[in-house]
Image 1: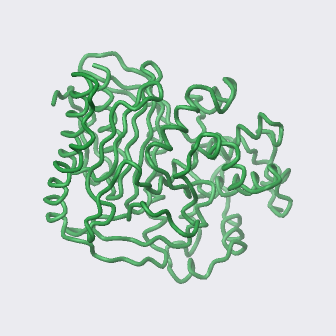
Image 2: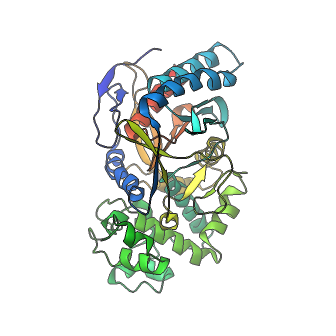
Length: 412
């Protein structure tokens, strides 16, 4: 596999320390969101968790290597040498990184390559398939932001409406100052769920109701004056879910289904608090020393609006393509969503895709929740979409580095 020139990046949020290719430059918003991503992982590593040791990490890697050689082979493309080279590059990159999950590469909304690696259940050795669903954590924010802009275009809300305009029960002084626009941009000044006293105590979390949780979240002091600083906030997106309830006249879940999921045929997408769970859904694992541990999520309603969706790769492609091609929101709304200075649940940057090449624009966002890690990236100059979904916890920089390598292989 051809490698571009490498530049070492270290990050406390990536247990692998992936070498990102080239002297690329990503916009500051990428770095700010990356610094906050560890919060989301911590969100789930504490509350009434059911943890079981699945297998020794060395055993997992040996079995994953065997699974790659067996499973991935069934997805070999048959449309020419370039596709075969891309397939080979993706397969080799996955093996190098011990990747367990799904990788999808598409151009103009049409899939160029889909490959699957490893298992949904490490104990049962249940293979991942192309339609396996994963919790996508904060990728949910990008979809919620799209939905909010749709409602704004339908004049069911305004981005300059305040929290108090829609949620009269929120009586804090800041409710008349914080706007929907600021919530979308993570510039509301609201704290994050991990700032709540007791958040890391299982007894506190297991005792919460929606009412008591909201009271604790809203009683946090503001981190900054609304609109002045970036601060990653699941609480802000939880409020957006409540605002959508009120503005749509139905519910966040119903509005999402009627305006995005159903029109795009996203039948494999839903809320992680739905019951029953989808049949072909990956279990989630985190590395603990030499072991991989399986973690059962609880209290997942607390992530409504901001980190609560599950999806498979095909559904995420359908959403990404519809969004990037202008099918879901207007050009004006897209300009707001992808504003490089104040993006709404997207990271806007640029990176070279080959040694010595000029940087190319990229729009990307990721999620990280207790072993479920994901990233969706779009390269506008190439109309190229790359999606990675995993259930064994590769970090943000690993996923971004793999994405840039794959983009290089797909475009050079």
